[in-house]
Image (cartoon, rainbow, N blue to C red):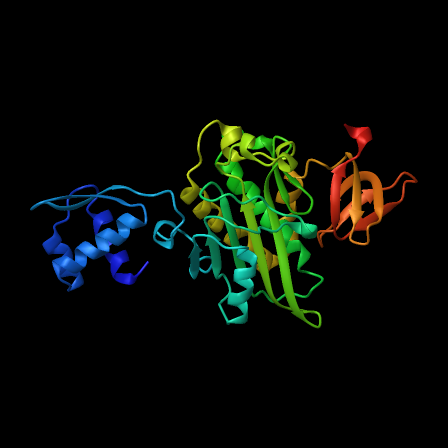
Length: 332
């Protein structure tokens, strides 16, 4: 949105539902009434409901369900996260766009948000169903002082932030749990996935891209068959639609606080919040690690570095750094 158009929108918002005269808008912008009208028409094309009456000016009567920066930034409490915010109507992948921004020198906290994705990606090469105008698809560029060994904890920290934002949006927060390392479940079904991609020089992180998708208002019945039996949305669980703008601000605020805590004191300060929601602890699980090896045992918890602790059938304990987790058949 052009700066002058955004200023017209801001003036209409400040009028708080009352009419704002064309003369006033013209004077504030230093532009003609005809140019003000063009900005109003631009806002209407973006979905804003603006009424006009001869001699009475313009009145904002409806705001679109869109994640425009002009909708997200007011009320956002972050200091650095999403302050450089890039909105896209549609994109193949917000992570790919964030990687491009990283190569162009975008700052720590630069954020991409899209209304829809045509090729959303999850971990291990999986796709992420991304219909437009229903959910949240966002990627955050991070430039922390981390080694490659420390980086995996940040995806667990992000899961804590996502889980907290979902809990704040629902009447039954106990239904929220984290599936190690990167999924947030709601009533046992996937409501959010997180994908972290990193670029490093030797053992030092150059930058991270943290991609987050949250199913907010998509109906379970509309999910493809491959997702329907294992996914849900906040709206399906709550029985009412979710304000996407409010949820997005809530998530960004929480994510900044969690990542600031990790930066200041390491993941150890966030680990209790992860473990509180890690309801697989004590259950028999099956893990397929990155080498394709299948390991089965009882989940004991996670270490300070984010590794999954697993007790094998012979009583020995092993650590899994990364992998895909399912509940073992014996536990169902």
